Image 1 (cartoon, helix red, strand yellow):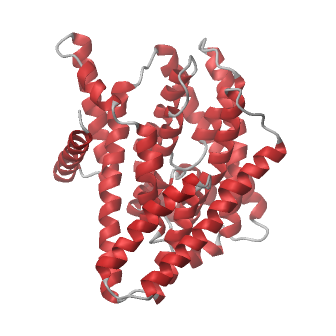
Image 2: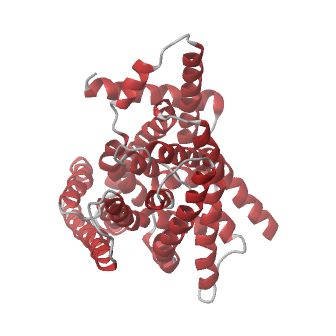
Amino acid sequence: MGLFDLISILLSLAALFAYFNHRFVGLPNGIGIMLIGLLMSLVLIGLNKLGWIHTDQIAGVLAQVDFDETVMNGMLSFLLFAGALHVNINRLAAKKDTIAILATIGVVMSSIIISVASYYIFKLFGIDIPYIYCLIFGVLISPTDPIAVMGILKKVGAPKSIEVKITGESLFNDGVVVVLFIAVLGVATGQSEATFSSVGLLFLQEAVGGAIFGVALGYGGYLMLKSIDNYQVEVLITIAMVTGGYALAQHLHLSGPIAIVIAGLMTGNQGRMLAMSDVTRDRLDNFWELVDEVLNAVLFLLIGVELLLIHFLPSYLYSALLIIPLVIVSRFISVGLPVTLLRFKNTYSPHAIKILTWGGLRGGISVALVLSLPPGPYREPLIAATYAVVLFSILVQGLTVGKVAALAKKELT
């Protein structure tokens, strides 16, 4: 099957599920599409078990979609730019210490807690996974997902201050996660040794280098936008920033996600105020909002139908059911400790830790990272556990975080 055929199938299914959700279900668009895709997958699996149909051909079509490549080197740059474009940089700067600690120390703390506990959970159900692979799992499942966070939080009515913290954390923790994931995976596969100096240099190259490159990219784009007044060309410039900037960052071994976030913040703040006419501003916002909605729809569809490719042995399922609350507890600890320590200089609402914990959604990036693991005996149980956590995070936490926030507000009145 050709690339055009695959794209047409995905877009057609996304449109059909979006219509059905809007017409009959009424959930937030991404969650609704994912839920319908998940239910369709479950029905197909059930019919296959009964012998009424065979899902091999459908699974073969899905297998042609490289989820890791599609998300990390395709959709992610567009979604991050579209999200960063509408983040107020002044609000982000006001919470910079909280965001920085959650995106670094918080991720490391959560990774360690999850890795140790999941090692014993897998052992409990007879799944023998070396600790180094449990550490990989802890790293890839710990960060909040910017795509899930920005696609859901803005539609469920979370408090603005909490939304800024979670959004900021999710936008910037990719650099830390990429460094940790590359370092730990290198040790697991025998390709490298994880020393403090090597990890530190990798962090400087990826995260800091990516941030510097993002500033240069954003400033270059700003100068070009400021020098003309033609919305068609200006929209094209932002597309070039996203595609060309992300690709160049990857070739330079810099963090593409961080570079695009920085460029998006600069374009959405300095560029919006000083380099765009009202017409350009409206056209640019409409274009990137549409890109955001379409790609989110396709991504959540892929997460839903990915179930057809995942093998859930009973032992995988039982361990995943214990790992779900483990991830929430680790999030509570990795958020609660830094926030408690920062209370001496910052003001937080009494329920900030609860909302930050429940609003720390996992999504497509975790799935993409686990699917990038090399083939081996440990890959399948880690994929099953990651997928279960992501499903719970989006379907349960994503649908209830607004209610948690509203309940917290009510208790304060």
